Length: 401
Image (cartoon, rainbow, N blue to C red; front, side, top):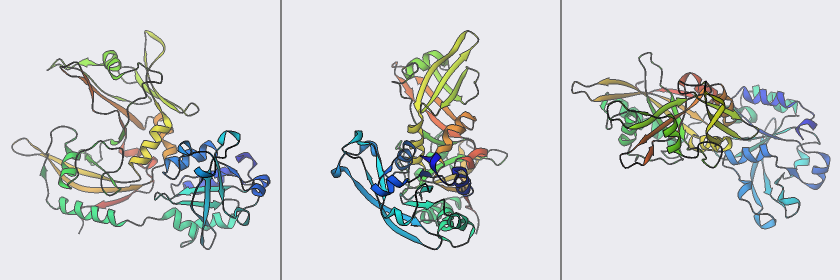
């Protein structure tokens, strides 16, 4: 239906991208306006699901399963709260539908309507065919600009920031755990957060990620989330099979292990990632001079990875720490900086994988019992490319007066 729109979708996409905002789009036609029906396309369904607003896949057909939620319709001079109905009819295989109340008073046939989520599971509608409305994004205080530039810090963020300032004021602190995870574990312990592997944020809806500052002042790669492959899809079928195929014996202990970073560019083991958005998958292949074509190693559903990103990072504090070693050989951290982000651009995930900006780390080893152990399949992004996934970050110096 988007090809029926009276306004080029590119103009709307570019307008919202100025502010690091993504949207889903619908185009009402006259028949739909007459019958109060809009098709919820696959793109719209994924958008609503990934922003935690609605999941059509879990919705029953018929009137009993119908859900009605608020939607804020934006005009050049005001917000207007209406309702949007989300449902699957009994007929036509329950094809997902939606309807914005009194839509005919806001849009004409073939207008381009953008649906925007604000990170708080609130939904907004913008008529992109209304030139004055779209141009109002440049007017300070206009409803559209307010939506696109809302940077109000929630009380939970203020509280967390004050706690971090107090910790920063203590200077260098001994790591409470050795190894790479010490910087995060120590900070969470100081904040009273128990170590966990939950897919949801750590502190009152805010995800907390700590990393070491390098000698050049930049952060190491940031861990986005952990997500194991879907072993039922193409691939070797299990972590043990991957470990046997690509692992090596650690020189000191002889333990079989695989600690390897995989990007879109083949690593020394020939492992690399490739995204196929049409089939909704990210695949880890291996390639070598002796194997043609490339071998399937593991595979993930792209939509599942996007959902993990959205669920884990609706709001995140990326905390950076200076590092030193104490006289008795203990690693110490001084937490000095926070980058505050909200609402990642999930549609950028696949392209950033293909551009080798997002990587995946294997952390596999074989225990003495013969059990395969993994410390996560860690999806990470480099600090230099952070803004491509998390737009408009706000930075705080924890040592500032």
